[in-house]
Image: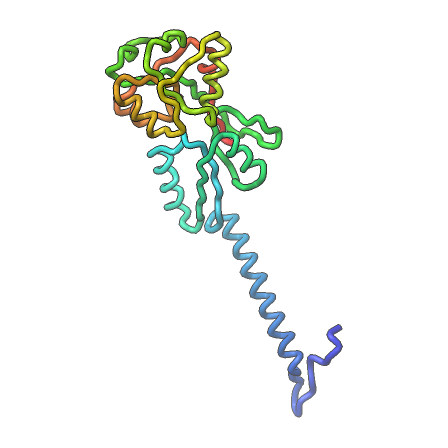
Length: 231
């Protein structure tokens, strides 16, 4: 098929021609490449090497998330992990376009091409510092918040979009004293003692565990039914 002889006859035995030597080297290289490929597949199957791309909302970035990630990376040192922090809509887009293997979002996916694997209840609550006048209440009506200094995430967050939905349902509209895209700034606002916000527990889990913040349920069915999803 090559149009040139690969084997020539020597005095006592057959030997490879120059073309034959090249063909033999090519065959060896192909075998080595195939073995390397199969080895990589076997390693991926056994979770020894590879790359995982994760997309999450900023609300999920916490000490617990970091600890879990570090534990996984120590267990599987051959796996490289990429983490993208984006809005819920962007996380869903990344999953839909195969830019990430899986993601975690607040609420559920509305993209028919992206399925939710796990749902966990994560109601939104009124979050205040433990010294705030609302801290001792068992339930807060949304209409009460108008008399307090309110800080909210901006409209790019699904959290804010759900709050706006609950406002429309109850016929009330917040005029936040602080609107921000920074969760760190919002935590600082609450920590001042006078600030009030509406957030799920996962955003302020460390502060709740330490007893600095208090999370109080509301009278909103919409806020009480929110959840987080693995997509």
